[in-house]
Image 1: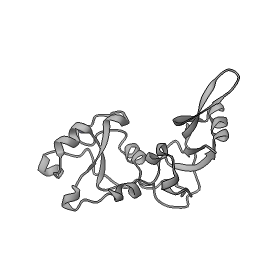
Image 2 (image 1 turned 60 degrees about the vertical axis):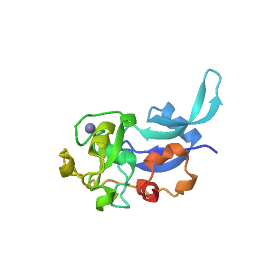
Image 3 (image 1 turned 30 degrees about the vertical axis):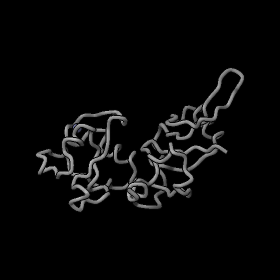
Image 4 (image 1 turned 180 degrees about the vertical axis):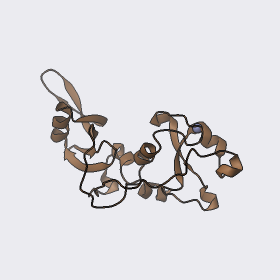
Length: 177
Ligand SMILES: [Zn+2]
């Protein structure tokens, strides 16, 4: 029973769908496939890896149940437009990381107001210092996104495939470290 995590166009997790539903949505041109499972299916003329994470191409407004945006890697990147908040360079996910504006050693928290998108070299340059100490200016103060619809996904993080983790609730994973 391979399942796929369905994300809104804004990368918010919406729900878990069966792989057949995921492929149907993809065939209808409604979603893009972001990650795949190892397992393949064979049809007459092609083979296809089963989708693991899919994203709607059009934003769907969901009736709001919780007035918050999940604190996840993908949502931090989305808020910061995949742009390093220090040097303003827009980069692919593979070249981005996260910076604690106020370092953990200085009491910095893991939340929307203290985590920003950062390129690897700025992150290295800043090290364990505050922006003032490092003489590095933030593009803009990090804020919690105003509001966006979110639906709680009833799946334990332990059972979620690795490829889902970036899209699920980040603070659970981060707080362990
Ligand atoms: Zn940078």
